[in-house]
Length: 324
Picture 1 (cartoon, one colour):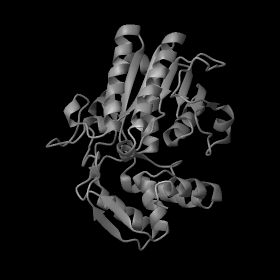
Picture 2 (spheres, rainbow, N blue to C red; picture 1 turned 90 degrees about the vertical axis):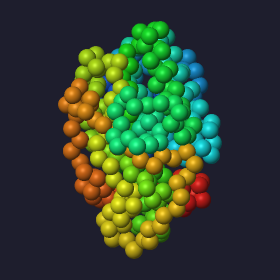
Picture 3 (cartoon, rainbow, N blue to C red; picture 1 turned 180 degrees about the vertical axis):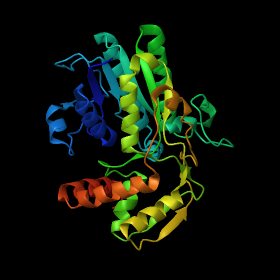
């Protein structure tokens, strides 16, 4: 079982929660990110600032990790349509990490992929891990995630690196003031601004951050027994974006109008994950419903927004897109 764990993207939403959970479980954690951690002073003090888009020949570590957990990514699907270079960055980061692992003899590699690799669902209700096909991919982001999975498997076969791949689905919760749909809708609802749903038919599998982190911890603890597997970490339940917008508006107590526009290029219309394999191999059972998770998130978000520093972070992120 791994004891020393390098986590990329440690300053992000999932990264922050995962590093905290790993530390509480007694692991030695090496946080790596290009950005500082604004959520946790302890994580920030130990974070190794590193641009993973470049060769990691100069990366010096106090401990050689037993496991790399690779979370870092440009994760906005539509952004990759506007600027495909962002998707290429994801591929380069993983390639350089795999080369670092090969050079240093790091045996284990946990990669967080995405439900985007399933593409447009057609007539499928729920996706099992084998239900991928290159012809259904809709964006540069999904294409590079698909390609990264293939690259990781090649490093298993050629160089003996043991991988586990997880496909995450719409993870939300604390530590998120990004432009993802839930923090964006909360930002707008607090300001009585319109909530626009891009695609009336959209329905997705939203995973509360605590359930996601629980699944990742279960993988870490069982890594050597389950290496080589690909696992959905989702809830197995689909929720319409229109219903999501209504729930957020009601939780905030907002008078925001909800509107519907057409689905944007590169976006898919639906995903619900089949999590039976994760249940079987990990004992993974997500506990938080979307409504309960939104209540927890809204309480955290309202308190977080009282800190001017956090408000400015989200305002600047949205201003770059002309959304603030």
